[in-house]
Image (cartoon, rainbow, N blue to C red; front, top):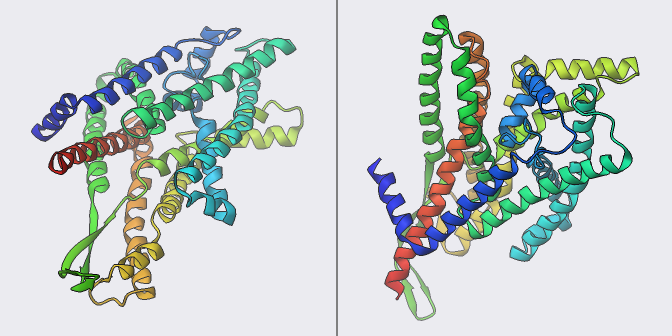
Length: 428
């Protein structure tokens, strides 16, 4: 605790980091302000009644930070942008030109971000139409004339892009990854509401179960911190060598391989995908074609957040995205080439191809453990809620994973900048 307090004190004493913190907090405040700016033509009373009986929409609302239940101009949240990011990363693996572009430093990153934004536009329109049809079928919104309908669509698209802009502002001028921090802010902003609803539904028989749930929550937080901090250190030896007129002494270094290389990204991606079947089901379940309506009804009921299919696919997707993202951000071949180029070697392993294969073997082993842990933690609250009977906290696992992971990542970003500041003093 003293360590955290000391770091916060150093953060507040540094003018540059203090300015970044203020910018981040101001953007959070603007985000929460937009969360209560409703879109016209929405019956909010009917909308809240719909959310009370639909667990899927309640789950979406948590990740939108309350913008959906108020149906604010940011009702769609960051989901379209996250889906576009997933598609672009998949395309980067498939198409060599995009892969080459991704390696071109800041310019390549800028161009891929542009393509992601362009792809976000049609995805936002599709999701906006889906939400409109769902709300119309539930009598939350009436028939809109063409001008009102276009205004409705443009408002939702503009809200999503304002949120994306907020995220980019935080990434550039604030602390940490803007998109992750906005999702974090949305979840934290809804915690008091969810907690209040949970407490109001608890009776004498459920108090003991609630205590069990709270204790498990603390254990989950501790476990997530441990897994995110766990590192497999691989020793790398550098032999004595002469380069030009200088002689470099032999030295030993370590290559740190994190148990969870991908951080919070697989969870965000998995949630975006696992919610999609029920979104499609809700969209088509009122179709006049019997077969389409039957399939849509099956998807809507089967992928209920407390159901088996939802949690099964959620578990599989968390594992799949953990491996996928780890492969993207960690390239064993490139690491092996860098080690060989600088005259290094791993004890007992030949440089080059053998080093690459060894790193791949270690990476797959530790990633398997990390992915299984994330998958189990993600579905654990659904299992516990079945045992304890507390349904309103079913979103706790995913929320805890995102909150803890984002806090740790942001803390590391702040710590690295503080360390850099201390080194600058020696350079001067």
